Length: 128
Image (cartoon, rainbow, N blue to C red):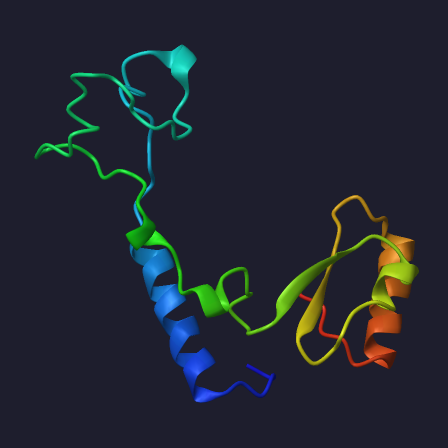
């Protein structure tokens, strides 16, 4: 981590990364049974749903306990907040102390080089 972070934020980032590794994939109820459902999470709302009632031998349900700490939510593991950059104008709005640039995938190689060069001049970290 290049950024100077206080001990509390460092501790919370470690917790966030640990929780992210431990977090299970949440699947929709009976996602394995019907292909048309897909496995994207949907809250079970059935009156007799075993999953909704948290009965044993059922997969976990999305819950507030799985969230990362609020102070570091949305933060990159390096300690910066990501800003998606499409052109050179977007770089001017970045604060290099707390934000880092991520060049959009739709940007071509020529403009990507220009953006990377400008970021180096302004001491802005590029994440990709």
